[in-house]
Length: 349
Image 1 (cartoon, one colour):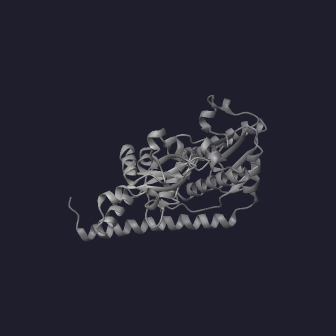
Image 2 (image 1 turned 45 degrees about the vertical axis):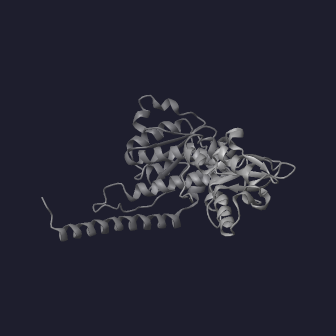
Image 3 (image 1 turned 90 degrees about the horizontal axis):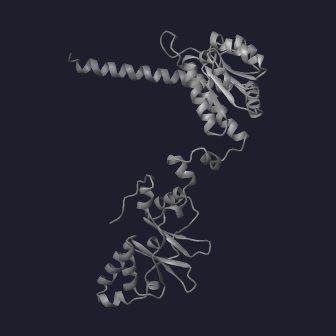
C-alpha cells in the first residue's frame, strides 16, 4: 500500500519524538542515580578488590544479558570474572563457584526466584554477595553484603513493562564498577594491551615502529656532502619517497623527499639554472634540516598521529632512528595502512 507522503512524514516525526522521550527519560534516571549513589557502591568495590578468586556474575532475562556484558568488561580489564546462568547453576554449573569467589547478583525487582535460590546456596558457602537491585529493602538487597540500589524507576515504554530504563541503569553501574576498579588497581594502557594482543586495540597499544621496517630495504641513507644526483638514485632504488641524510658521525641531520625534489626542480627552473647545476649540488644545501623523526621503539599508532598532525601539512614518510640518533629506517604511511591503521591523510601529489 502506498502511504500518503504527508502522513508518512507525520509518522516519522512522531517516532522521532518517541525516541527523544525515551532518551530523555533514561538520561534523567541516570542523572538521578548519579546523585543518589551511596556508600553501597564503595563497599561493593572493596569486596571485589579483596576477592581472591573470581567475580561470579548472575542474572535472569535481560539482567542476564547485562551481566554477561559486565563479566566481559571485568575480564578485559584484569578482574577475573565469569557469568553463571542461575537456572543452569542448579544443573551442574554451580561447580564453577568456589569459596574464594564473590557473587555479583543482578535483579531489578530483587525478588527473582532463580536468583534467590542461588543466593541461598552461595550464602551457605560463605561467599560474599554484591547486589545490584532497585531497593535495599528487597529480599536480595537485605541478604547481600553490599547493595547498589538503583531506586524505583519507571520503564521507558508506555506500559511500564519492558526492561528499558532499569537495564540502562544496571549497565551503567556495571561500567562504573569497571572503571572504578581500574582506577583502584592502577590499571594502565599497558595492562590493557596484555588482554588485547590482537586486533586494532592491541596494535595501538603494543605495535612498535621497528616491527614495520624491512631492514636495509627501508633504510635509504646518504651523507650530507653527497650530490643531489646520488639522492635521486637512492630515493628511486628504495621506492619510499625519500632518504635520510647523515653527518660525518652517521647521525640524522636532514631528509630529502619526493615533494622536496619537485619544489627544488621548480625553483631551479624559475632561476633558469641548468639541470647539471642541480644534479651536482650537495644535498646539505637542499635538504630539510632537523626533520621530524621517531625512535625504533615508538608505538606505530603514535607515529601515525605525528604524521597526521604535522604542520603545516601531514607528512607521508618519517625517519626512524636508534638510541644513537642514527637512521634505523624510513617509515611510510602505506606501511601503517597495511598494518591495519586508518588515516584521513590524502597524499600530496
